Picture 1 (cartoon, rainbow, N blue to C red):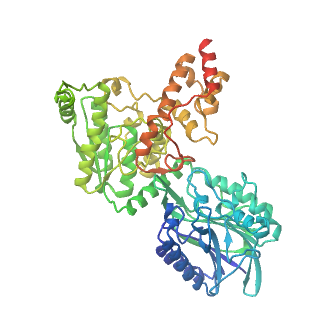
Picture 2 (cartoon, one colour):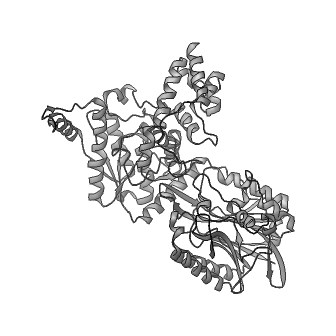
Picture 3 (tube, rainbow, N blue to C red):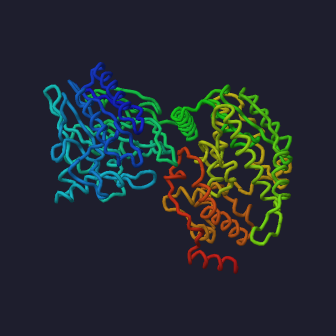
Length: 629
């Protein structure tokens, strides 16, 4: 009876030596458990998100060298693994050496060649070039190779015949995107389906995205059911990034039987190995579908991502500026679970505009966490800065004339924010021996509701891919489930969100941020996360049809509640669109790295240019029509 092991491993990007050592340990474990085949993830040797490290020939040679170590370790066991393959005699379209994203199979120290491939490995066919993926920049696809050879991908894409203990098995080998072919002209799975296979293997390096696992179970379950053979999906765990955006890889490797049932799922964010007898899978009971709420998955992604990010940069202590608001409170509760309260310093930095209410809530939060706590008032230093700016003469060296700067109330607000971050938090972090966080949420990041070199600063923006409603949901989840007690004070959850930078933002009078989160969270989300991104033209079409809330997914009645007239609605729409496509882009470029959880995170996942706001001709027509009514 053929026994197949799924080896879900943590892949460290850019460290083939460490990854190969992990692979060799798992091979020994699989052999000890009686496995005939052991499967590892896509790009298990080098990692996946490496930027232009792929252009280093020395690194490529190293990956090949470690690949040979894995092949040599395949005595009496079939080893399937992902690695970069290099044809040193050919070039990519960019003139650099030819590289393939490849699926290798080794047995008894030798590679097993796919039936019709010109190389002793399977080449990835479909190259994702959207969101965070940039495969075509570095790798040559099977489609391109087929054209180069004057044939078709269907002629090259072929099963691998395995000879194990006197029997032959035919395996269909796919690499990640090859199983997600709905929007491609070519479906590798369907081509292999004609080959009378014994099982499929999909090796992946698939970053976590909210809802992706449910969709994958539907897609891959259907594929296994229609083909009538089992499918093994093996994904990595770990943390990888493309500079500006940080991604968690959750693993969740899954075995589907020939009925399309999920019969084995490996745990999220853990290295693990499981062995399944191929012939018994059809009789295995289907695992129950998870009833966990989305926020539970988000919490685990954030916790794991923060922990591994800190380990990667060797940071053990954290400083957080807390205001008595929800974002900094949730950040504090989250980081306390990662580094421990003894390594967490919370700093409250009140000015004359901070109420006794929020100061008290900050103290309550710190007490609940049992962490380090400081109160550093900033009014004196803010007043000193304003006095210096207004009283220091500004000399025109061309004419010798003198004038003085005038600090407006708006500039004074920015001075407060910068004093807190650039002076207090940066100094406290250095003295404490750690780093300070950026606590921005996704709504604020969308429209640049932050201060450059102020509250936008920090080493990581862990909450910047969560809308405000998700931040509140995370507060409830941590209170109810993670801590099992009230850590984030109910008063923080109940209070109106406010930056408290002026008397116009007095929380005791119910005055808060200009962002109306129950509506704007969903409006801003339509700008970013819809696959066909919304623009003001789309929003005005919905307004005209009376379907804004339906299309945005927000609560019914909010448009009338917030915007009594068409003029009010249009004014609000243009205010935020101008910021989203204007100054907010400059701020996002300078923002800290963002930990991704959504279907579209800022950074490399959402690529943008600083071109300024634009309104289509149709938008201008709709605007004129609505204002004339």
